[in-house]
Image 1 (tube, helix red, strand yellow):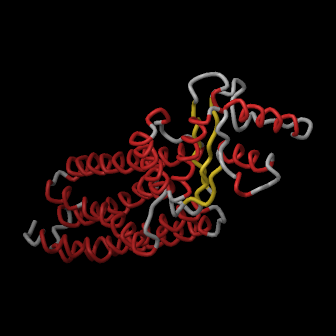
Image 2 (cartoon, helix red, strand yellow; image 1 turned 180 degrees about the horizontal axis):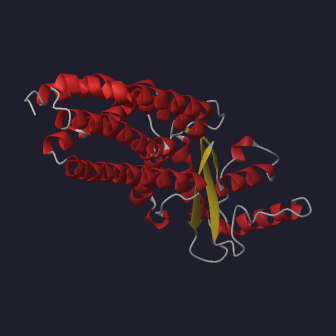
Length: 312
């Protein structure tokens, strides 16, 4: 359950009982009720309509807003006096009665859905009730924007880190061709993971955004181990490309397979969590590590043989 909160100001002290203000609040609440993803709307205008009906013998015909501001103020005063001891309406209005709170409850909404609905409500307010025009607030809205910023910054930061590491590999391996080639086994596992996740799940959350940062060191480590042994075989042992690939497999293949198995089993423990972000993190990291091994064992050797056929 997620909630969008609004503080609707009447512009003056005691203004929340003004009939014009109540009609505006009621119109905004009705707009929210028409949205398919909204399950409940709590607005001050509903309290006044119910009080008006109660004061007319619960006649449903009087379930409407009072037309007289003095009568509405007396209804509110009577209602406050009738509340149980120790309770008040301060969670629905301010002390000066110059603003009231409206809450829209949304069920099964993603962060994207919350941002979209909030923007739609803001556009409707600008077009119909400019005095109320504002962004929604509340913890759900905050987390919806925090998750977006976190995902964008984490993904962009990881891409920059990948590029910088690739440039370092070019300098370390002293080969532009090998350095650029290392981009593929570093990028492809993450792309494959997000493609698989998008097909079966369809959305990423905050946990998904940190997967690249968590697994990138493992992916790069595997690539460096394989390429370093390959280049050693080419430059020091004077082996052909295909023989150098076999040399790399003999020296680091078992180590890479063992590391992948141990890390995968370790991160699968997170997948057993009942907390969705932790569960998603465990699954995504495990899938990425397995894809990284598959790319290093299946794709990288073929690429090395294909582009490095020339004898040392």
